[in-house]
Length: 131
Figure 1 (cartoon, rainbow, N blue to C red):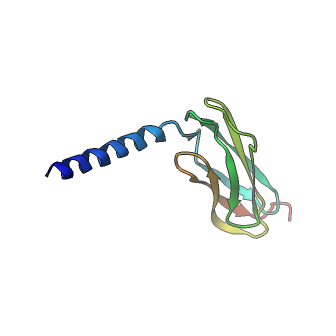
Figure 2 (figure 1 turned 90 degrees about the horizontal axis):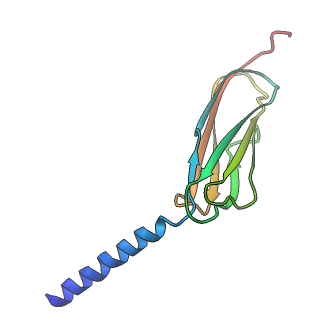
């Protein structure tokens, strides 16, 4: 029984230590995680900036940002974002086809506490009124 108690104490101590270390990691705090463009004109690119703050203790390093299709192009802060500093992920969408409603995802990979984060853009693509 003593061995079982010691084993439980070690496991609880390990879990507690791991949880405390997790608080020192880098972490995102976005101003917004979804952007609705509303109605946009076919073939006219639109962009939005997703601004974030590193709320963790370590520098935040984004290793990759991927979109779900070629019509959505992300650009992002490539230098480490220090504690309390801000970074930006700019997403540009260029619709080649009329779409009554679209939703696109942009996936961020980083060293943050949550290493994979997803941002969304949405809207409706309409024809130009000058056609």
